[in-house]
Image 1 (tube, rainbow, N blue to C red):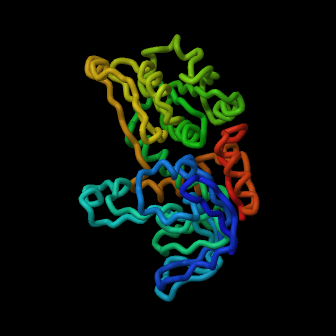
Image 2 (image 1 turned 135 degrees about the horizontal axis):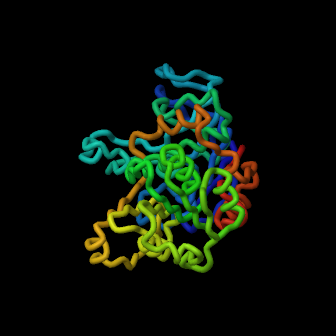
Length: 336
């Protein structure tokens, strides 16, 4: 089969690999769509020596079951499925405390195991969720939506809160849609790309602000200490600093984007203490995957304005470069 490979220097290529072997509890999937995530682009920053380089990346995967192991009962050949890519141990202290997203022994499809940037993918059947009512490119958005839903639950905004979202990428735009459905308060979105802000307005933003410069500076400076909830969906340290300055006393800051490994943020602990502020981290998802899939199946989340570019597997290096550059795109998918 054809598959994309990523080496430890972040160089990518497309090559021939053997088709995956199948265990009794596994399913073989013909990949229909797989999204490029920002975490895929920064795998080389992970300080771990156990990754099986060169690896087949890709964890936002949907497709069609073509073969099942002898013990599989939950899905059948011909059924469309979406892959829940994080395989947790269920036994470590964090899993036992209800934090599977922080599992100490997690195996991630597309990182520790071969991922979805390939023609075929084998996964445990327990991680293949039926998505037959959805097109594969829509179902492949389940994982990033689950991450965003986890962040929303961590933030727990009130119905009338004033919300500011920094970053109109996929996560920021999913967050916008989720909070719009439960909040009557005004929502403002900040980004440096006008075309992303047009999408944000289309998806329900009350105000959009075009940022200028590395700090994301623009009209939002006049709104310092204005917002009850501020969401950073960029992971950029200077933007996180700016985001904190926008909080009202007693407000909440959600860190939804993934900062670089060595990032340092200059936020005064005295400000946090004196303003009674809450800074909330959000990593991955816990039990939100099925709920995210249900939202997509119910048609409550739009994906077509977010999935802006699709490439065949043969053009994976071009797709990778396009997603890395961020130029005129939001979510890039591979459709083998």
